[in-house]
Each structure stands twice: as C-alpha cells, then as structure tokens.
Length: 152
Image 1 (spheres, helix red, strand yellow):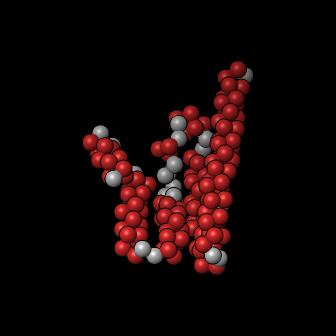
Image 2 (cartoon, one colour):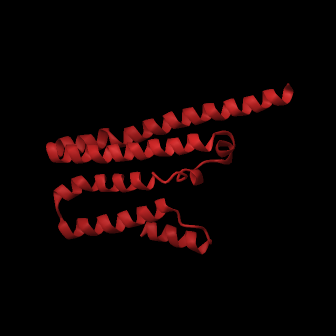
Image 3 (spheres, one colour):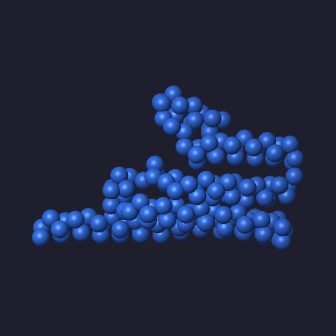
C-alpha cells in the first residue's frame, strides 16, 4: 500500500516514476502474493534473493543513482565514476542474492537467520560509507583544483 501511495503521489505531482520505484512495487506485490499463496518456509528464505537480484538488475541501468545525488556531487564527480559506483552496488546486490541462495539451500534455518542478520545490512552500510568517503574526497579534490586554477 505504501509503494502504491508513493507512486500515486509522484504521478499527481507530474514526476516521472523511476525504474527503482516500479521494481519495488512489483517486488512487494509479487513476492507478497507468492508468500501468502505458498505459505512455504523455503520460499521465505529464498525471497530476499529474488528481491536482491531484481534490485541488482535494475541497478545495472547506468544512471540509476543520479536522482539520489546532490548537485555538488554531479557537478564535481565524473559521470563515469558515478556509473561505476552504480555497477558496484549492482554487483553487491547480485552477490548478496547468490550468497543467500547458497546459505538457504546448504544450511539450516538458524544459520540462514544469522546470515541474514549479520551479512546483507552490514555489507550495504559498509559500501555506503566507502562510497561516501570516496565521493567526498573526489568532490573536495575537484573544488580545490578549480580554486587553484582561479588563483593562478
């Protein structure tokens, strides 16, 4: 319901609905429906992989990250670098999807639960901070470089 509401609000405001928003809505509707229909614990363990893989595939679109970045970043970091970070995020999501399938099929529910608690979120947080530090450094270098050219 929240995803549908967000898309409705964006449409009313005349904004374009991005691929990530459509993918999120589709995942919620499809996976939620399958969960209710099957009531299968194995599906519950595999469901994060489906979501992560779908998000990873959407993240393969070159400029998916652009709408989330402030102008200071897009003005000071090359498009190529930002697209590269988008691909790094896609690779992480696809790797997490594969790892979850492996753990779900090769270990018991307790190990799977521990994996889902200790791996996906910390991996995303770690990549977020790594990207943040890299982009912050790149922005500072760019601004300092332009300032040095103006004073020279």
